[in-house]
Amino acid sequence: MRVDLDHPADYTDRLRLKSGVALTLRFAGLDDAALLQDYFRALSPSSRYSRLMGAAPELPAGQLVRFLRLGEAGAYTVLATLGNDHGETAVAELRYVHHDDEHAVEFGVSVHDRWQGRGIGTALLANLDCRAAALGAGTLYGDTLRSNAAMIGLARKSGYQLEASIDWKQTRMRKPVAYVPQTIPCASWRMAALQSELSQTIGSRA
Image 1: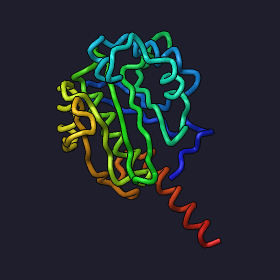
Image 2 (image 1 turned 90 degrees about the vertical axis):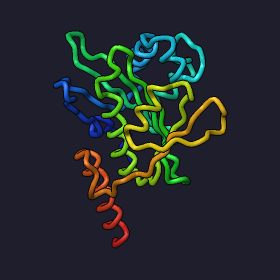
Image 3 (image 1 turned 120 degrees about the vertical axis):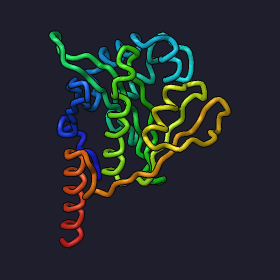
Image 4 (image 1 turned 30 degrees about the horizontal axis):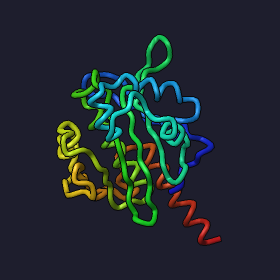
């Protein structure tokens, strides 16, 4: 499946957490520089260090640019937002890269300190399962600091196995993608994957 970069809003998901909070998951684009940077600046120093794997007061300029370039080198940034009187607030972010040659999706994720422990991280990783399946990936993996107990706990809860990473300070989280297009539980991604399969079938018969 290929993501239609001209219509990113078609891939927006709206979830309701167990608490009743309505959460929107959408791709970040070039207009989201301030929203994304404000999010990273608002993280606690320890949360920001864990996400960036280094000390920084904000998302470095080069990374900010890359995070906002939708689909470049197979990479996508997803914002988890809540509506408010002024528009929206970012409460979490997910960055993933589709490595087509490896049939794998690599990811990194963070949740704002004030919103941790409310099921947002779990919801993001469950949504990532759908996205990876739609892309045809067979494996999900990501690296986190060995000291990042919250991320390691979330990964285990979400079905990831832990293994050694190339960097001794990090741990690799890995799990197989459990879905095929017909069984993807997220309706938007199931539909996108099935439509892509249909288009490919029609194209091969033409």
